[in-house]
Each structure stands twice: as C-alpha cells, then as structure tokens.
Image 1 (cartoon, one colour):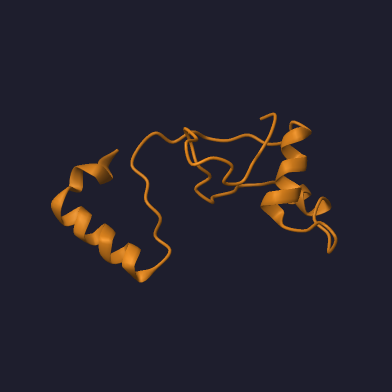
Image 2 (image 1 turned 90 degrees about the horizontal axis):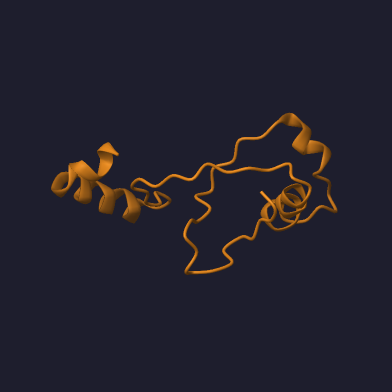
Length: 85
C-alpha cells in the first residue's frame, strides 16, 4: 500500500472498516508524540510500504450502537441471505 487516508472520500470504492491486525513492532512507531494512530502512524507505515489491506466485497454494516444492533437484527429477519456472503 502506497498511502493511507482516513475517511478521505465519500466516493471511495472501499472504506476502512476499523479492523487492524498488526505485528508487535507497531509499538515501536507509537509514542506520546505520535498523535492519532490512524492519521499519523498508519499514514507513515503505508508510505514506508509496511501496510496492506484485505478488500472485502461482501455485506458490511457498522455495529457500534444499540440502534445498529436493532437495525441489523431486523435486516437479518427480513434478508438473511445478506449475511451468508
């Protein structure tokens, strides 16, 4: 990956779903001066070629709030096929 930009465009083909798997060495990059992980550290790692991504083309929906849980449960009740991708 040549660059990383958090929420850079509403028209982007893919979004950052917020899941990160990393090696312990990432902590070498993080310090009290490092700032926000996604804006500074991940941008730096991407520019150094130390970051990649997995493009998921199936169904995805945030599940951060109780409203999201309720909405997804309703969606599952009416369209369970969305969850079998």
